[in-house]
Image (cartoon, rainbow, N blue to C red; front, side, top):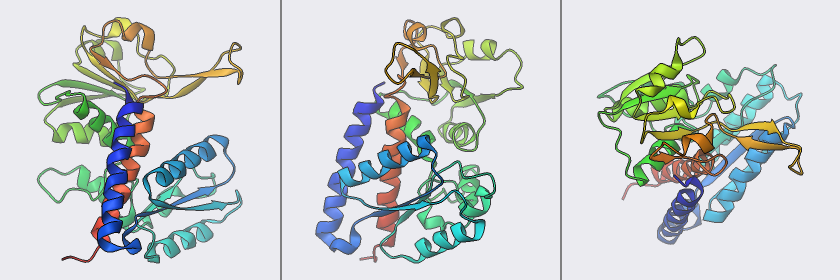
Length: 292
């Protein structure tokens, strides 16, 4: 499953929708995303640049806020409060992880739920965990991207046995809930799970999101399983100019021999995560438009 090509298609759709909104309502209807980063982590800076570049590509206004490492809890929460009040900001993203002295839960709780385009506000997560009730305004971007990618490749999860490896609040848990809502039978494996490989062997669909390079081996997979690899890990590789290469949580070369569909790393789930951030931002903007 080519996440890079699929994400490009999604970005094209988003760009068309942004143009339609601006044409119909004027510049005040141009979606705006504020991206806040604290500190100078190289990986976080790379992710932020990619997100802002994607915004510019589709016509979404992006506002960058780069705060020093020593920024206090209160100062960061003040920035969030100011962004909540801005009419030209429809989505707010605080890049994680934050420095250790900052309580990220308090920061994320302070984002207005209608601007929580990352889908991490407890009300959005809580709604995701309830059936037959008001759905969340936003779903976390990586789980949403996994499901969207499978949808576009015609992978039907209803009635399927799905194993999700990893239970993080960002990927594993929300993805499991999304799949349950689509009538999949979901098993979550984690660091205390006994005999993970035996559970994976029973799965029609495997989602690896544990952060361990090549954790899932070819021998774990049944023939024609669908494999979604969320992991992105840097491993030493002297043959590369930068001294390392990126691999997923699945041994791609081996797994590709038995899987019916598999996502590569890089170029799989990563681009879809950013594409879903764009779609969430457009949806946030549309909710702020006056009703006709």
